Length: 116
Image 1: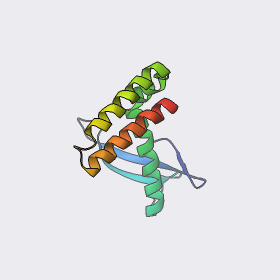
Image 2: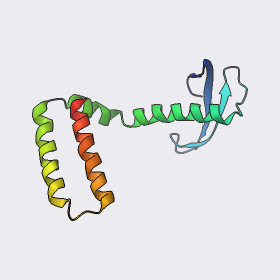
Image 3: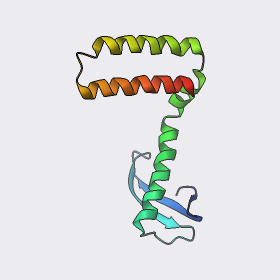
């Protein structure tokens, strides 16, 4: 049973069944109200599951997030950004549109990590 999830002023919980061997793998689940009644409203179920996915994603990637938060020095980021820009410029004519968009996004990501 999960902790309470607040959606629109009401509290819900995720009930989940895991495997016998692999306790971290979710097999089945249901959303219930604070007093134990199953929720059948699809919108509420989606909101609860979306919230749980955000929490699980943050927990799984905790070490990566911690690493990114500690890399704040200008001299660590600027050389990476400059080198990536040079690589992107050299490869631009060889890549297709989707690959160039991916390179643009990665460059944007590097700049945002530094900015944040």
